[in-house]
Image 1 (cartoon, rainbow, N blue to C red):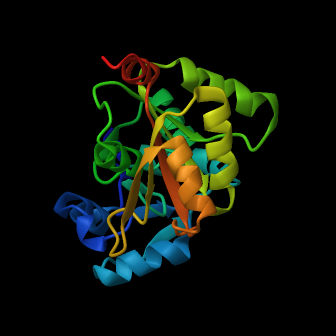
Image 2: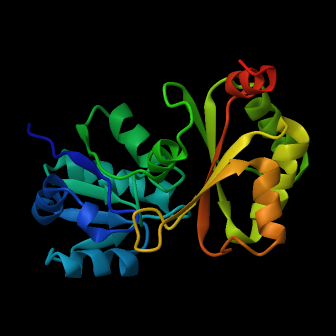
Length: 236
């Protein structure tokens, strides 16, 4: 029996021209595409003249979609999985589906492309050979402090997501728990008004207080690792 393949397809995080030829070919050839927000994905498909055959697959229906997806694959149908931007499963829906399709012994492949944490890491100019991505931190409480303490002790460069509305308290918590680390605040990545602000945590807080930073959209916050921080403090 010939099974269908689940194609996990990265989509642009900003500039639509970042989509790959292979991604376009895949999205045009599959039997169905699972999308985080079909209205958002329709705009991408319309831009590239991709036929619409979309089904929704978001955080609250991912669990109920799995059996239907497995059934389609077992019948030989090909399925693409996309999120609104970037790589499905990376702080976006898709992880559960990918895992359960693999557990079912069915073919899965990835069509690579843009991923905002990696773009931000490179733009930060910080250590790139070791890094950790923590997604969105809990908004408050012990879980948030535990993750920040984990970042404080990690020699790797860390990356987190944060909304513009909560960037100021995040920087205050980083300064209090991790010290005055180097920080890169990255927003609108790959878009016309891409903005990357680099400096110490205290400098970024100062810029926020002075109204020098645009508080719009979502940030990728890149945080210097413990080893690099300690070397700087020693003047090594």
